Length: 168
Image 1 (cartoon, one colour):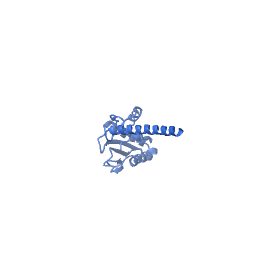
Image 2 (cartoon, rainbow, N blue to C red):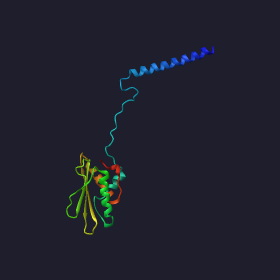
Image 3 (cartoon, rainbow, N blue to C red):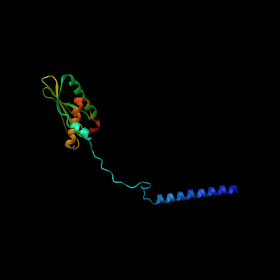
Image 4 (cartoon, rainbow, N blue to C red):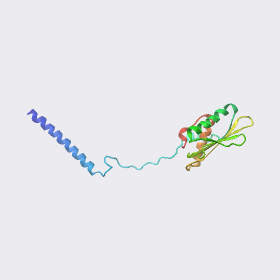
């Protein structure tokens, strides 16, 4: 008798498993191909292509793009400019300078932003740095170009670079 109740409970368990399996197959069979067990489709949220923290924007807005670096810091500022082009662009190159001026640029590199840094020797022996940015391989809004330019200028002047803002 104990055998009969064990076999009976096993049969009931097997039947409930079979019923659950049949129900699952029926459910999946009714779903159109490729959509089984997927949730409802949601409209994709449009992510902003570029966002800037208000505090950082305010900070960068006050960074000059034309300044003089005194002799003691001159060498380090120029090395930072070269480092930026080496690590953050597809390649900076020296463009023919005139007189006591030399220009570092990534023009023609295929980058979305073209950076230009002009270094001019001053009468006091320091260097005047002038920064400019332009759209490269794709259109970039003017306000974003300004942020790019000021981010680079701050890096050269102070050694602070906000890498998250750099557009490649």
